[in-house]
Length: 200
Image 1 (spheres, rainbow, N blue to C red):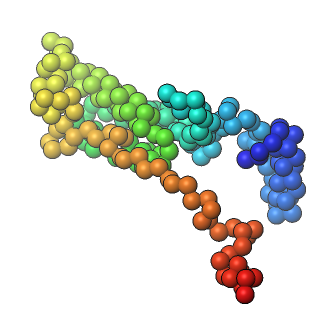
Image 2: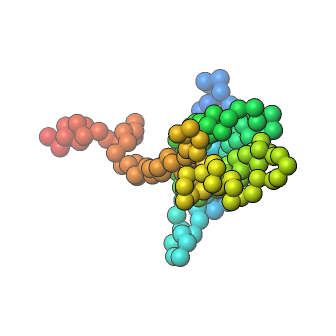
Image 3: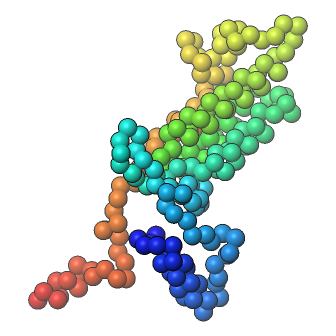
């Protein structure tokens, strides 16, 4: 991060490349870009971008699951709910999908991820619903009322079978990191023992 102009960032990038070169490392050109924080960038599955907080005029830097990361988990769900998987029972499908979504959500739970979790769960619910209707397709099409009566927790739209419920990504609580930058030791910040020695 650079508090300055684009030229400052590009100069710093050149300095970083010079430091890495003696170590036998280099910056990958296709992965190294200079962007404004308002434009945002993707890093390790997250999109980091400064945006206006809804309902206010204040701007904050948000870390959210990237579109690519969301699409990747949707693709996994699509594979698990494809026609070829209809030989398994609903309980096995729910258990499999729950594990996938819980693992994905645990990685992204430290970002601003609540809306992304809900969107992924909504997509997954629709996939399971279509999977059930294809699996039980007979002379009469499985209607939504019948589907709810047979495969959901009474009074809800939560799928269940043999004691296994659809929990989804939203079952993982979002836990935001608190800012602790001033407490992280660095080679440049004087340590408490050094400050005590200097004062004595």
